[in-house]
Image (cartoon, rainbow, N blue to C red):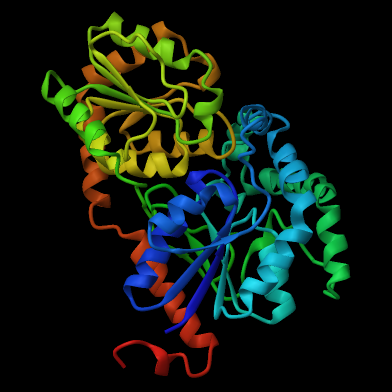
Length: 432
């Protein structure tokens, strides 16, 4: 038996995949612990996985909505995230991780858990890097859609040299955000880093797990060596109570399949009047709807609409006429497996790129969130439901993904990595 320590930071979309992998490791007789923000303790421990508190805690309830709004600013959001929510807490996070890492055989890092590579280097522990979406590889051969400058994607026709130059400029700029990280490396007695922690500096020479579906991106010449595309590692969260399930089942049984609207776990905090637009759109074409709104549930809804703070996506996406979502990688992974047409309304971060990749497979259409109106929603959903090609493509993609178990594949890769790195590991594998 071996012990794996995961370090991650962000919303539920940055936590659920590691819960899925941790559960797969536990099922194989190993031990796994997830180090992340305190607000995720209950969902992690509720899934039967060990939890370790690691700051920063993003969900400070009194200002969380304002914080999310700042992070979702298209131009400055990533800088705000790194400078305000990551860098000021590096030292305390590193102290936590140094302690938690001592009993671990392999460390597994999310790109924003920037203290974990320092702990691994300081303690001489093997580390595996992970990415949850293709954008994070920043490939010049398969350039992503950058939210603040989506037009740059059109420059791909000029070959990889253009994007290689643009990404070099971006790395220079982002390098200025990482001053506290460089200072902490010096304090720990570590050699200066050769690369930005947001780019190549996060990669591992041992193993890099691409925890997204192969249909979204294929390996490129500038991806890090030793990269394995596992497929999405899916965890669906806690089951709602019996009263919620009963209400949902009664609503689903009372009429035609509804359109399901979802914005993940963080964008719901800045949804604004999106839910009112969704209700108005369904009224325009006489359909039913389910809204997954997070904590701010609209009141006085029409009879053809239900709203819930949360439902497991696997419970409703496959029973929808269509799914409208923001293309967070976890939400998208569930939507692709549901086999239903999709309207994707991306906001920021990797979402525009995820939307572009998903729509290229044929199951859906995309409209930027900031351009959504009730009329536009109604027109786009009507187009989705009126053109059989979208439903056909959605079923085809779902069939392709039906047997993809990203969590199991990632767990097996981690176990193999531990076996290679830790003498005597094989002797500790249960059943041997």
